[in-house]
Image (cartoon, helix red, strand yellow):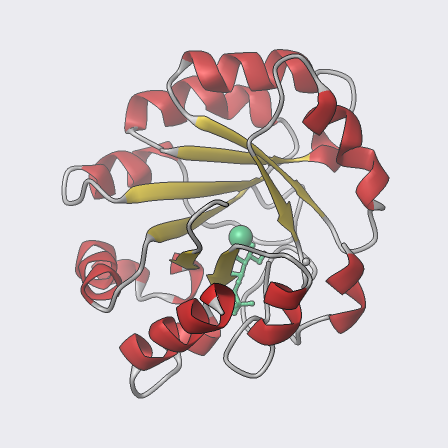
Length: 206
Ligand code: DX5
Ligand code: ZN
């Protein structure tokens, strides 16, 4: 059984103080740092790219769990590998024809390949990526529409399980089998984020 992971989404952090925010989350007990990379095309929002990952990597050796909400994920493998990204999770909706090549390139750069799916994408779309000779190692089930933090959790995703997760919704996700919880606004918005992180971890461990 994979040890449960709590990965605060840095989308909800103060980007002007990213290294300090990352350090704060790690001090509060975060396992991974979830880095939402958006190209303003696959989703109607534009966030960070390889240069920011490269800068952050100079300040931490934490696992940087990059979530690529981009139209051409293959274009980001080289720069993110060089920048020091740990995980590279692409969207199955953006990798229809070249996912096997994509997985191979991600692994060749020393990153862990993952696949994400939008709420409306049926889970069957990722089965072939899990059964492949060179499979993905993580599935990110979006429980909000990709593009923004702070949205409402979509319980109807539970028979599939990223987003809108917090103390009041994590039990639903963990009983549906989720073992890596991505939470942004519920952690960064809390008066005691460390408490939320330990509540989330307790729920996925029980
Ligand atoms: C949404 C991002 C999520 C989001 C999670 O596009 O992929 O990582 O930031 O943040 P909350 O927990 O606020 O939904
Ligand atoms: Zn994300």
